[in-house]
Length: 296
Image (cartoon, rainbow, N blue to C red):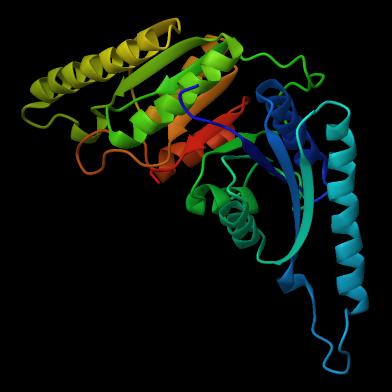
């Protein structure tokens, strides 16, 4: 494997959305033979301090018991499918910070989490635990929408994996992870570069800019082809046009993509980019899991 995955963290709050994400995490751990960690964070902001008590308040005890039930439920599900070690934990703090602290303390390689939890029926919202974790985590995160297909653990297939690229270092790191997953599932890699000249309008030299971007795109696609060939993974490359997020989502729907792997940072300024805004847009609207890879 290009990237070793020895330990997977599944955060949960006991919601249906978290359980859908956990099922994907368990399936991946079973395929790889990785250890599984299940974490529930009691949000310290939901606990009102009792200055007259040295122990837990009634509310804190209820929240802790709910968190323990949440992790036990996922662990019970996992035990039927995994041969590796299963570790459960309940922590108190700000949820996304508790997740990041746990990753650092337990040498986690990958996080798998749902994008919808206890906060309502909306798709992942700015400021949610999933998005804050996406912005701050030091390891890749596979985000799982509640709208995706639910399959039996052990039967999940990723036959087509999309790797958007802009030729940046951030995209290259995501490509390594995407190829790792393609190796595991014997998947076909699709790589995509989007040429977007809408920012330039009718500016002088727009034609030359378009041609330069196409040339950059061809070089970026060729780099993915070479890396996939080295890993003996089938690959198809495409140049698209228009805003990157829209091109990625459209390609995913049109080509039956099962998973998207992309960087959370890329080029900036006047060149192409795969920065937070693009990644977050794809996470919000994708009907398939998205593996988001940070620069660390």
